[in-house]
Length: 229
Image 1 (cartoon, rainbow, N blue to C red):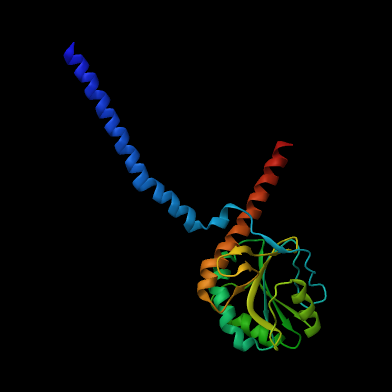
Image 2: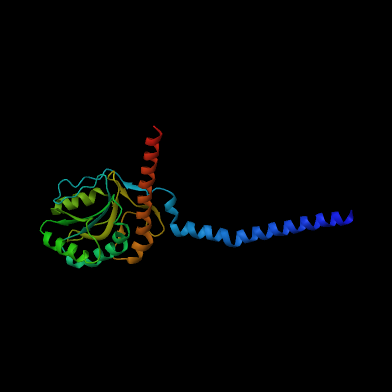
């Protein structure tokens, strides 16, 4: 009788010890892994990319086969001095375009002044040596058209005297400017500085992932709803 009680007591104690060991292992190894995956993917990946400015104008007045509606657009302003912004374009191409360029709904549009057509073509040719640049497009407008469109984005940023800026912007399919309203450095972040490879890697890449995932999820929901009808 005593032996049976002792065996049960031993079994109970052993079970408790194993359970505690399992709990400790989970705390030590599994939870840190989950936390790492959470932060590595970016907290914003679990929500939508904030809308900062609504109802942007279409590029109807600009020359070139360009249209914002129904496309997710990476929008830039290279200005007259395209040669001196080649480094910005190459950074954007290497860090963002080459990673996400295969997505059907994504396009890259650079707004430049009329008269820079040959410079734009030369830049696209150079970029083409590094990747397929089918989705790199240029919109040509007058200085006033460029200023008017840029001001409509309400970013608080300014174009330089050449009608350019190192910043690029994310515009969704409904012509809304997307960005961050809780950026740790700027508070509200309207655009991404292509001069900084670190900013493209650490912030823009994450935000492009978010908006692409947002539309993919919406598409899956729409397809699921249709199949249920």
